Length: 179
Image (tube, rainbow, N blue to C red; front, side):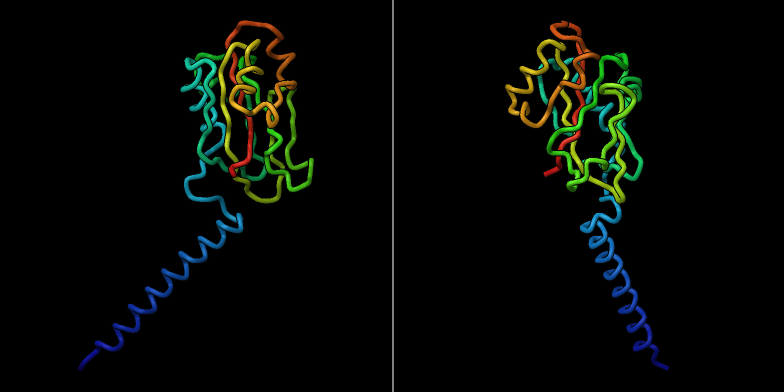
């Protein structure tokens, strides 16, 4: 008996199923129904970026894409703890003007006091980038202006936390567009 024809059709069916699955995953990622592969936890990415920037005063770092799932958040206390060497009052989290909001101001919730917490309340996962800069608090605005981010990122939410004219080292984490 020759079963070559049956084995060939099963193999072709298996290949078709694998290709269809790959196309479905790509389509769901494009529609942002599932987070993209490699999208990391925002607090982990922010903590690692702060850890690497804390001794590079005045330098801006853009992270790779991070994915905010439903109800996920960035927390200054968590970032300070995971980065090591900074107190929670030395980390401020802000929402950049370019952060995706889809015309809905309630997608992002600023809570926990000034610069303490930003929570994503959207209905599906959202990919953004984080901008991290560590500097002396009195020079943070100038650094953002020097790098061309002063129109997108305001440090107003950090002013009470950091104090004006202070020379203490602080780190700003801003949520910005991934485009």
